[in-house]
Amino acid sequence: MADAADDEFAARRRGMVEHQLRGRGVDDPRVLAAMAAVPRHAFVPAASAHLAYDDTPLAIGYEQTISQPFVVAYMTQALAPAAGARVLEIGSGSGYQAAVLAELGAEVYSIEIVSPLAARAAETLARLGYASVHVRDGDGYGGWADRAPFDGVIVTAAPDHVPDPLVEQLRPGGRLVIPLGVREQDLFVFTRTADGLREEARLPVRFVPLTRRSPAQ
Image (cartoon, rainbow, N blue to C red; front, side):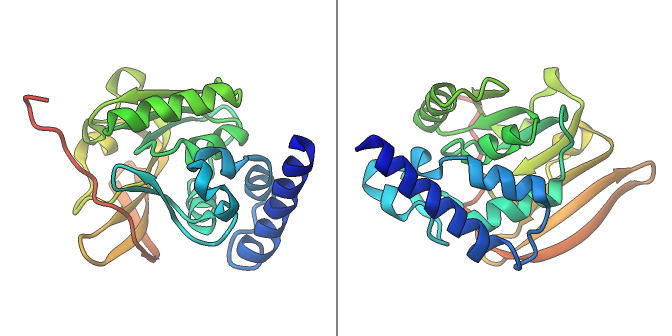
């Protein structure tokens, strides 16, 4: 029974890659292979598993969502981490984005502000064997200074500006992929250069806001 279910999910992943990603601007073979490998259904609530490979975000509790597969793949391709790259992720959520990055050979340091989600993501990633992902419960605005510098930074919630600590922790030549805006958002790719940040707006997106913790928390 489990084998049949696994085969069905694998077939759905292949369909997701062919119909939702390839031909829509996601054409990096490494990214497509990673998306075909990561079991997205393992990162969503059991009641939503049958929707895991649809082209839609899904609720994961605590007013948070797992992004639609296209957005995950697009952001991963925009970040373009090389094998062995050190990547900072702000907003672990379900852990799915981190798993995709790990499939590309990245060492991922992921911060999640919602404590139960951080614990759940860490458990799911460990159960699936993603030992190169390190999840921390905390406020991602300040980054993860003692693991910097990073070759890439990816933010899966939307602030209204680029947090300075994330830029400071980015290696020269590294990329920051981040949605910016309050009601209306655009996905930006920033590259750190000797002169500062080079920015490129990519596409309209919709993410939950990047939240902060009060000093008392």
